[in-house]
Image (tube, rainbow over all chains, first blue to last red; front, side, top):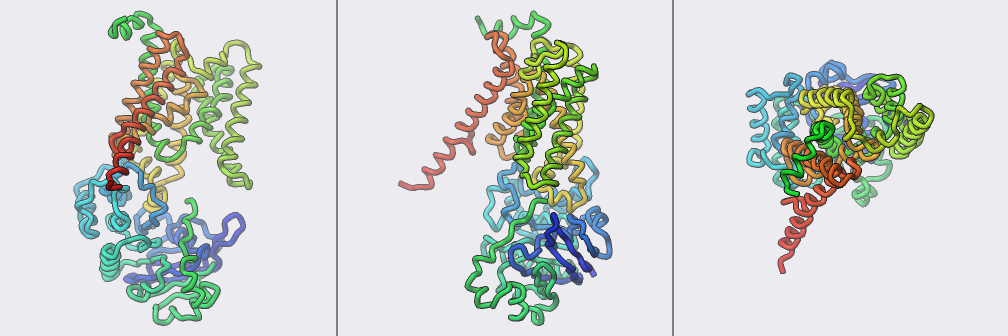
Length: 255
Length: 286
């Protein structure tokens, strides 16, 4: 099992964000994480990355506890656009190289292997020609691809993507989905939080429904039912499609 | 008076040679750190820490230990206190900062007023680079060496910590250690800056050169270089200006720094006001 969440409860300042969450994801799968604002999506991501200490339960990645997972750079997180300071004086190549830091010595001097992996990662997301651009000079789609390249350079086996398709062009969305399918075929475990319910059925083989706990998870065809979705969103689906704008992303709380 | 004389004549005084050298060194150290402060958004934190070191400086004078040690303890202590108030009460961070740094600063004022005349309040508040002692020069050199070596070694980790702490943590970097490293450097550098411009203006040394450089480039390496350049020029020229004008040294240095910032803000090739206006005009075809 590559992601194993066992009965995890997390509370901040006495407020329960996640209660008794249990989830098991296999290698070689793409799962869509669906839930409302404040349903605990970002808490679940934090728990998987080992950033919060659960009050109960535990999280294992490939059977390893979080500290070992971090030391091995096993989990990559692709942030939402709003979380990044786009004015920061770093180039696309600099950002992708940051994916390699965990493998370098403590002075972070890139070896030729690191250089090569960075170039390959840039090529895989079709960003080589923009490698020297400052990150703020990219379009929305290019920005997403730059951060996806960083996750590739990190050679993580578990990828967490937070709203990856918000504000991206069709070309980027296609490139990204093809790449995610490729990674899945190579045995990566991919968890994507998204509000785009329609696209989930097209490329996610599994769905995880969350509302303060994991309500259901499993094959899209079985889990993605009207009844389950109405439990997830606490109303009927018709309300849901009407109020899609209200399902806007929840901000990633300060880490 | 001709220009060469303007620079050379004051150097016949030993105190002026020392002052110029110390300003130069402090300019370099503060400017390097200012790049990180600007990018991390720690200007307010810099202001807080620099004020909060005051009681530490006074106590160190009383105990006759190097005042960098006292300042360091209170600088880090103030940030721990801010963190504690934020975590344990419903008070927000900016309020906590306001309470803690004024509280520490006030404690420093009381201590100064109750200690024998060996501590000169105006020197702490406004700096005294023209009358700097050899012992203080030595301290500045040690502080500068520690700061510059630490940054040279942890430069990339610190930058990643400023840019994306989530990623830093997820690949196993110790972000807590990086936070306290940056904070310790801030406390130490505040002490160095205090020598030339004093507690009240030291935050300018820790913010303005980085901000000026940030307007002029999109590359961090260049940003460091430009910040150091503008920091050293304003520190050295400011020291000369204060000699010739017989005016406050700290004031002269910070006025020059602010002047350089304004120039960058208006004329920066890409992020300046003129460039922005030109770009807007191009985007609106007449």
